[in-house]
Image: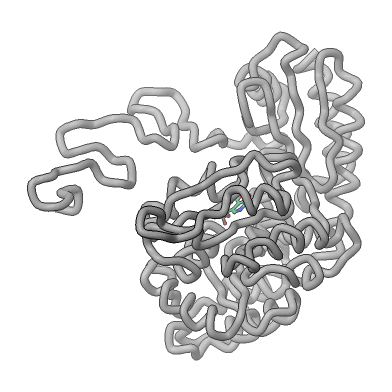
Length: 389
Ligand SMILES: Cc1ncc(COP(=O)(O)O)c(C=O)c1O
C-alpha cells in the first residue's frame, strides 16, 4: 500500500525496495541473496576473527566496565513523558558542553541530522552542503525522503564552503525557485580524512548564510575529535552555528546514542520531530548512562590521534602507498601505486588480520579508536607491510 504514489501513479518505495514482484538489489550495496558477503555502503560486514585488529571505524568501540556499570545503575523513567532522570541529566550536560540552550538525546547521528534538517526547513527548499559530506553521501537521501528537501552541493576545500561558495550557491526564493533553507557543515570531516576545521572557517561560512537568513547546522559526529585536535572547546567550534549533532557512540565509546543541540525553541520542535521519526524512547536511561560516562572520555581522544599519526607513518613506508597525513583519528590511504584496487587491498588486509574500509576505487580508510592501542597499531602496520607490498 505504501508503495502506491499519488492516485494513478504507482511508484517504487523511496526506501529503495523495488515494487512488489520486482526484486532488485538495495541501492545501499547489499547484494542479492547468494552473494557471499553483504556490503553496506562503504562498510563490509565481517565475521570478526578473534585476533583481528578492527580499524574500519570508531563506531566499532564496545562499552567498557564503567559504561556497563553506568547502564546497570542508571535511574530511569519514561523519557517520552520527560521523566527519565538520566536522559534529562545527559541532555543538560550535553547542552552545557556545546554552549547551547538545550539538547535532545537521539538514537543515532543520522537521526539527529535528519531531525535538524526537518526542523530548520520547509519542504521543497534546498540544503547547501559539501559534496563529500555524510548527509549527502551516506544518509540514503534522507533529506529528500523525510523532509522533501533537495541538495545543492559544493566541492569545498577541507569540506567547509568558503564565503564565496556559500554566496554563489545560495538561492533566493521566488516564484520559480525554492530558496536555500539550510546550510549543513561537517566537522571533523569524515570523507575528507577526519579534517578538523577551526572556528574561523566555520564562522566565515555561517556568516554568509546568516546574512541571507539561512540557518546553519553542523554535523559534528566527531566534534570532540576536532576540539581536541585544535585545542579549542567544542563550544567555540559550534558558536557560529544554530544547531549541532554530535555522537557519543564513536570515539567517545558509548554503545549507542547522539546528541542534537540548539536553542530551546529548536529543541522543542526537534523533540516533536524525533517522535515522528519513531525515536521517542522510554526508559532510555540505561543507554544514556553510558552516554554520560562517554562525555568524560573527551581528553582520551588525543591518544587515538597519536595512534593515527603512528599508523600513517608506518603505512607511508610501504611502496606504492600514499597516505594523507591525519589531523585526527582517520587515516586515508591511496593504494593505486601498488597496482591494487581498494577492494583487493581491503581483502588482503583482512587475510592478514586487519580490518579496513573501502572508501573509493583505490582509497581505503583506517580509523583509530579506544579499543585499539599503540601495540595494536604497530601490529597492524606489520601486517599491512606484508599484505600491501
Ligand atoms: C560525519 C558523520 N555524520 C553522521 C554519522 C551518522 O552517525 P550514525 O551512524 O550514528 O547514524 C556518521 C557515522 O559514521 C558520520 O561519520
